[in-house]
Amino acid sequence: MPTPFTTQDFADRMTRAAQAAAGAGLAGLVITPGPDLVHLTGYQPTAVTERLTALVLPTDGVATLVVPKLERPDAEHATGAPALQLADWTDDMDPYQVLRPLLDPAGRYGISDSAWAMHLLGLQAALPGSSFTSLTSSLPMLRAVKGDDELERLAAAGAAADATYQAILTVPFAGRRECDIAADLAARLLESGHSQVDFTVVGSGPNGANPHHEAGDRVIRPGDTVVLDFGGLKDGYGSDTTRTVHVGADVAEQVREVHEVVLRAQQAAFEAVRPGVACQEIDRVARAVITEAGYGEYFIHRTGHGIGITTHEPPYMVEGEEQPLVPGMCFSIEPGIYLPGRFGVRIEDIVTVTGSGGRRLNNTPRELAIVQ
Image 1 (cartoon, rainbow, N blue to C red):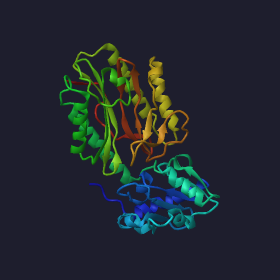
Image 2: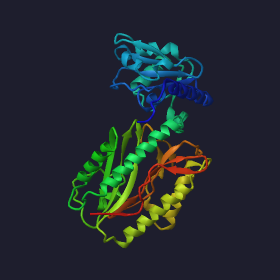
Image 3: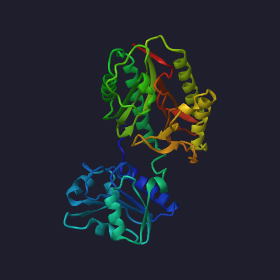
Image 4: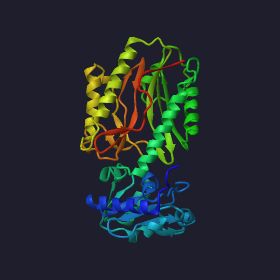
């Protein structure tokens, strides 16, 4: 088990977030239930309902967590609770009037992307002179750079996903449905220590040409190429890996060719990782390899996404993202080629930026594996 986060860890995160908000010209942040609240306080309400819960984090002042009174006992037990003050409200009160004195009536605030529209509108009605901007727009890198304690968890999640892949190579594929293999993947993710399974993509034959295909009733046949993309949460942090396998040793020439192109693209993108390189450059490097091989039109998604408490978060490896890579960032590198009606190939690893380059958090073989 990893070392638990401490109250000081959360206090430090809130301090850094307040400083980042000030640097972005904001009066502070309004954080509602979701990954940002978990990251900053360790608190996650048992159920997210219409009752307002919000952390007000001013750039200059005391952080305050506003919660429904009936949920206050749970909030008090959050690891980060001693580093902030708590304010509660009851169902006969207007919660926005509880928030009102905590905010600058003319201030501009970053607010969680996951905030309910009704809560944002309630804040705007209570503070008509204020304004709000999404955290993705104002502070996209809020959770992007991981500390050593977070990297430890992400590495463990990656190793558990690797164990799942190694295990799935031993099960029979031919004659079974995609959903059967997906169930095997889910079971093995849980056996490897995941507390939650988020996705198990099994795209066989022509279904592999759909990057987000949901495993269905198609029966897998000898000669199929199968894309396996799976992950979940372990100790609160995500795993996400993709490998492509082939059913039987009789592999078509184009399948071998496409897999080799994707493998080269993935390796080239990994070798481009180093501090100071723009995120978009990782996408450009992978895309150049695939385009040069004549398959550019069949690479239909970005090269990668950040990962942490959530599976998809900034930074994104995509054209137009000029954010430079910083040590501690974690993201996927997952180029793919998808030939409609025929098959698809994707290879994905989670990578973290080090002081001099990159380090893979997935380390299973990337070559085309043969399954039965």
